[in-house]
Image (cartoon, rainbow, N blue to C red; front, side, top):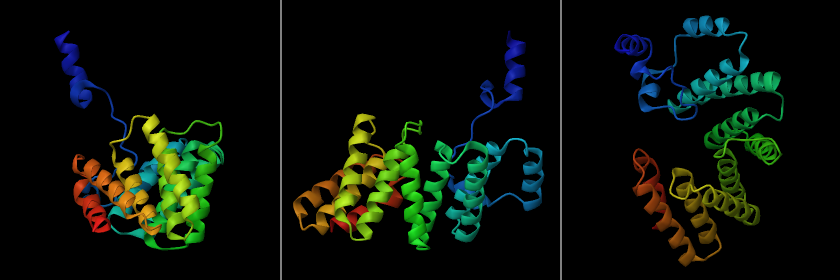
Length: 232
């Protein structure tokens, strides 16, 4: 028994088998390391040519790393390629197509490039996730919060407020009221109330966002200053 356990431990760390990659959370170490060497990635991709979804996932992860390094052009290229592969391999209404559409929309919005296309991609992802098809539980509220913020920035508080409230209700139903996504939602709701002149409700929303962020390791440095500025 001990001999078998040692053998398994040699094959895979901790004896648990291969780990799935973290799909949408590129670490600082990964960002600092940079993308893989082009020739090495090309060889790996050729070897995986019969598994398009796996190639698309790797392209999407690589795009996220490039985005973390502020290489928006490179990130956009890989996001578009991942989206095209998923459309061909999985169909245009698959949840992974919604994920790729969402990731590309976020990139275009944050880079300030082609906001019309970003909005179309957000709405496409939202349409897919609202269909009877199954989407990851975190994807629909993430789309609603992003699109709600986008609507606010475009001067449509009615749609923005509706989407944000739907997202927060969904997060509450899922028991995800204290996560990073909820903190972003409260921050955006604070902006909604502030734009309407309801400073009391705005302050309450900002304070709730701060309360959540303060308890999240690894998120505070990025999100807390933004919410404090809004509260001020």
